[in-house]
Length: 342
Image (cartoon, rainbow, N blue to C red; front, side, top):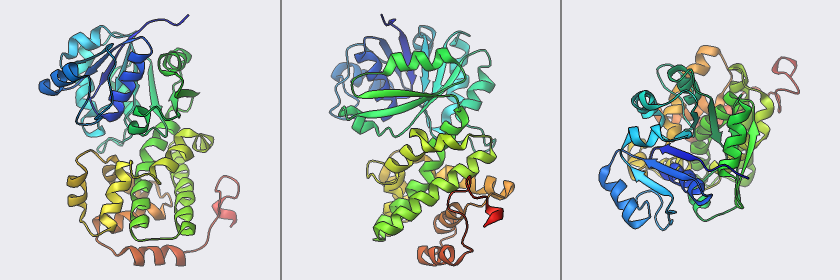
């Protein structure tokens, strides 16, 4: 028999709303915390998050609130669904109300710029007494709202965290798989946003299916190579948080990062593309941070270097692609045939 829980989702965006509503529909009490009082009142009254999830009915067990102390202190499990830029400040504000036994799970797919910390590492730094997890995978919120069959990954070193999230969120259309490799799962979610921008550019330029296939598979090789340098397990990238998330975000117009790349490919400058999107595209900042970290670690990442040149150095995409194609040919799957043996 399942245990009824109380959860809080910090952040009233699309994915946070979807997660809170799944938990509420599964019979749990769910607080959806946000800063804007008017939005919280509108959600309570209309049972709908009109800004991020229009036409998605919210269960009566879901309570929208701006009362941080009340929401956090009552919860068994806290999800942090805040853009990476504000992630630390929100957790710092909330931690005075968080008890040591509460599970804290990040759903944010990003990297903190100054420190190059992942969101789970920020949680471990600020909440050293709390069990921590990461939820990531090919999870377009609007498809979850339509109850499209979806799978995700809960990564944690704690068996209780993994089993609790599986029980909390598992339902007929949302399946939760488990993984121990918290940093691999988290890096997969953050890094794939970079390559979604590249895929949007490729689509806008009318590149062929062969070309797009090459970009996606080389993206997978590149992101796994980088992540392994930071301690991730390469096998993680064969799962939902790696190739699964990469596939969906590189092929769907529902992906915010893909849409930014497409808009730039159609002639908009980067600022215009971001403004038109009206939401956070984590891949833009992640690209900056990863490019500089790859330079520091001397990790070979030609797609990251090329995209950085296109977006921030105003290089022509055709010249960047030509340069890649004329570069020294290397290994297909790095963990089978090392680069040194090519």
